[in-house]
Image (cartoon, one colour):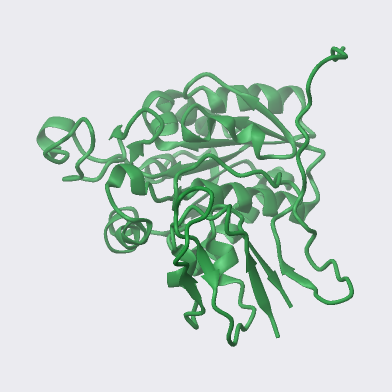
Length: 66
Length: 267
């Protein structure tokens, strides 16, 4: 199953991936990262590998695996 | 000659796309022309996306060794720290003039400029109009976010009517500051321009369209067709006083109604 890997220390907390995931699989973390923002985290579930989150990420923090 | 004691930055690359190993295959990664360093842009800024799209287009055509980029003055002034190809710097707004010189001296190189709206639409209006009028075979990537981002969010010529900025605290008044300038429509009347398109990066689908437009603009230059320019509507959440998601919605509902998306001119 496809999955994504979010580099949590690279995330600046814009959450554009959260609104662009068609299945709503990306959530906001409850803990802070090194930048002091709550990063987006992959919640698991049925990722289809559509790459929309990685396409919109302005910081290159998302890599999609098959 | 390079001095011996010069410190060179060690920069890594991202994992390559479709590089399969034992367990997983990479479906999407960053292009090889982009260094795997963190960029300095604010959260939700569109510059990071446009940087990547430019690199993807360059990798697609396999022209990384031939590309010479001209970086602007503005938020993207240190774009050379992120791009793994030759980048030079120009004085504020004079980027098309520098690109003209490079292209005329080295016609086999692919020359593109990367400019913001304060750079291209304000101080560099003369340069862009005359470069377009001469029909220079260069590509312009114009990132339009409606404010001067680097200097603190002042009003730019492309600021929408009624928009509050650091210098128009009650909103831009058409009577006092004039109308927002539509650069692409202005350049479309010049016979020297061959490909003009306006795209946006407010959603993933629009980013994919923007990628196609940027690829086509490079293709025009590779085929020696002439002047090509892509305007990218981008978010500036910091100086729009919005969250990145609100800023993306503003482009969709407000900015793209004034600056219509699509191909303005293609021939």
